Image (cartoon, rainbow, N blue to C red):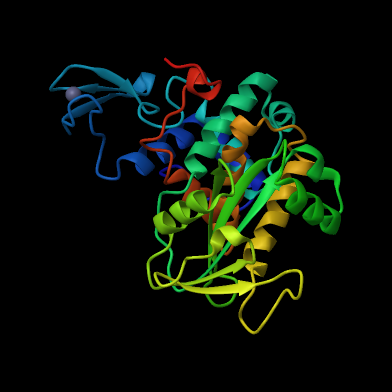
Length: 313
Ligand SMILES: [Zn+2]
């Protein structure tokens, strides 16, 4: 950030700030290589910058490379002046941003915007981390009939049908005092005991307190965990036994899916879940902080169009 000292705090400031291609370039450069550029080919730090063309040349292996190599921007012809405001938008809009909205906002085609959004979601994807202490676990269904149903009806319908035509999602929330909880969520193949137990064991430290509803698949978590069950047929809260934290996350996720992403194919659903989980986990930050949190994760993540549409390369 050489040209301007003050980091942007609002969308408008971000657009103005990054409109200067040199500023956007320097911003990503300092993000990637705080101690100077490193060659992605041979890890040499003997790198020259061909200043006029904003490219780098390795003195050791002689390769030339761009600032975008090895990031979510790799091979993209879209300028950083558009990428960075696009990131700002998606990490800070509560219900997300549709590809149509983004296309209009930064003047790219809808297809390009769709691809950009998925790459940004990749940066928003959580690293694996273990949870401990007080943890809530719950499953929900996304899509199909359930989307337009009243909550109580939906619950009855889903428990009855086992979620036919819908995608099952498992969420795990670690409680942390006043609203500082963190969530991890993802698509699951089914709600069978083996599936749920497998996910829980991969996500929650043994010895933790696990709160679930009365679904039979959760039984047997003891003695590895202290298992607290809240039977929603009878009550929703008993002391500190409840799943309200994760249910709150489900309502945020569903609001976004219903309002902004009207049709999401099950194949892509996990990316929207990652997006909402990112905003949830960084909700205590201001917009600028959330943007920087996403920016710090653009490196080492790459998504090609073929991967995105499910073709093996
Ligand atoms: Zn090199």
